[in-house]
Length: 361
Image (cartoon, rainbow, N blue to C red; front, side):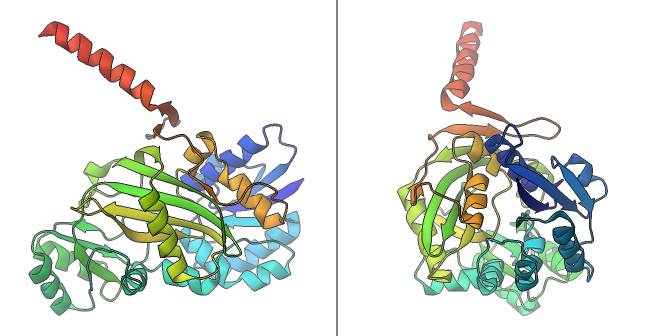
């Protein structure tokens, strides 16, 4: 039996991972899942065979604790979904690999480059990839220059972090200045031209420079977007599978601009500009998107592929591009299980409504 250690095991993105592995092993004979989580409440949501409460990733005890669990449980593969933990694990990869546990991650310099949205922007701009214009916010003078450049149509965000951290959509100058001061964001925030609300993502796995599998997904809206000033919460409400050669091409260019030998998970985020062109905004590096169980349910189990690649047992195809059927919808919400529907399912209910409404008029 393969023993897999999954960090932040009670979080939604790790639940997508564990559920995908359960789908690949419904009888529980292949995978034994071990989870760690620093949250004493979230850990009880985990769907693992065994769990351990652990230190936070930024605490000095974190890596020694992880190494102890690896030793105690004879872990074969370690995977981390949260960015903060993936970063720390990557920095300590030599210790983890020396313990006999396998990792399947990009090189650390690639992780550190791509987790920083500011550095990614300059990389892609230099590579000739269309990106929204950014201004680094080092001081109040930069903020004034950004408002002079973008006017009221301005977007502000922090360069490191997930779930729309530090994001402001069309704020006043005073609001932006206040948040940057309160959060001490100077030096790790940017201002950018405001794009549209249409967003897509492109999740992929690479092995020693070769693409293994990739799938596009459009985000139809952010869950609870009306509760965040920016409208961005990091929580996809409903997503739909897509296949778009333009997104495929730009995604690969973004990844290959950062490394000539991609290895591991690269998940590219795009927002469309006013001309209808997808602009890359970041790469979620070394981790899948939160809703990747959607892709599993739609027909492509990337976590299972990932584990087999990590162990050197993968015998499937390579360069699999958008294997899922288009227009499959993954509908999510709080305190409810996600559901998978086809466009036909959606259209039937809408048509029924239209017909009934027409009878009333």
